[in-house]
Image (cartoon, rainbow, N blue to C red; front, side):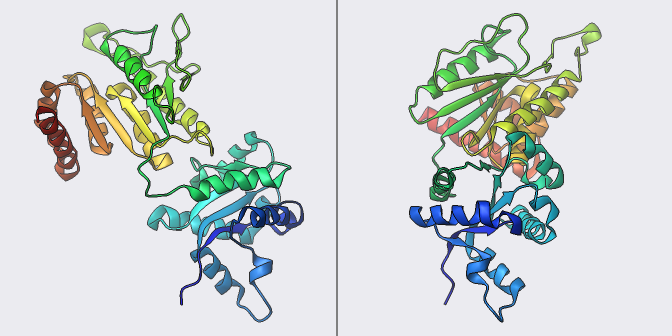
Length: 339
């Protein structure tokens, strides 16, 4: 008979048991959260490694207590690395870090355990009931749910810095999305030129980046000025979105526009393991732009366009089976529009 599923497997250093783990378990009991804790599960004569493996395999989440003591404990680190590798390669048990200390300390853990970068984490609170309530919300999420609560758009334009139709399109799109009462919209943007960006919608949150432009205007001899600006933009935008991805602000979908921002979208897709929507506004004749655009077309989970002509442009490109599958999605969309 298979063992009953637990909500959380508690991975921790021995030094944190008294001040963190046991008070949290008491709060778990009050909230009806089931958990696996070594001192309650491992008895005399049990094989420790076998019991731990059973506990992990029968738990939905591994909650790891990230503290200074954890960095000095090799055994719980081994548990964490094992589950992180399993989650990355096969799925299954998911990892939720519980940070004990200031949030700035998370960077230290990212450097030691790079696979936790991008995971939603919870910060320890002196009141264990507060922590248990946050974990309860995560427990009740359905992994197969189609509900989208938060979208992160990456754009090179937004009012009042509008060069063409892209900025207008993104503004209207965020207004429409922000009108939904249960949907939050984050917009990551380049460094403002002269005036700050403007948003009048409560649920639309703008995040201009510091010292990260997205220059792509024509320069001498038809070349593109500041060719490295959009590479830096991709790095800085990805870092910003990862920092936003705590338990309350992790996006469910990344949505980027044109080749200028698609590198950032691709990096976020793999770092956070969330779907990428890539919207193309205009066809590109430049080899540089088109090659980056093609990379986005192959990596995106869904491609959207704003005209039948743009769809025809994409149809003429050859991307192999992944690209063909995505173009079939587009074809069905246009068929349904005509119907």
